[in-house]
Length: 189
Ligand code: PCA
Image (cartoon, rainbow, N blue to C red; front, side, top):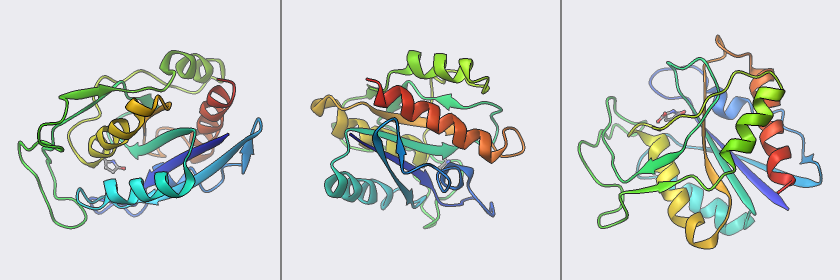
């Protein structure tokens, strides 16, 4: 079994992005599952293609994309990705979409296909602050979640997105530990 984890590059002037930094110390395997990690650009027009190349290359059995939610205090698995791009700040290529669909004519939304209840229970047992989120926003994280689910849903592949807080809220090692817990849940499916 192969689990692909992705994180994002720094954006909005931030020096680092814990969503990728937390993956640098992931073990190579968790409970027999191979862990693959990759970094995605914070660019609306490049991130989906970069993710698609990873999906084509690795053919993962499960996919978890991570991003930073600068204003949250907990690890927040996302329930839904929406067909909507509306950015409060430009992306790393200077593009700032406004009231646009991500995929014209695509479904309005997809639900995450990750076992969110089991993931939240595992994080609670590991004493890592976590909560379900009902909106991934309308910036690049939601963009990647929507594209990921448009690929994973027809294939019935467990896939979804988890926002992580800044390192000032949860230390990087604990965020890494949270992702090991997520991998354990997926490996047990
Ligand atoms: N967070 C942004 C995009 C990249 C990231 O790490 C977001 O929440 O959309």
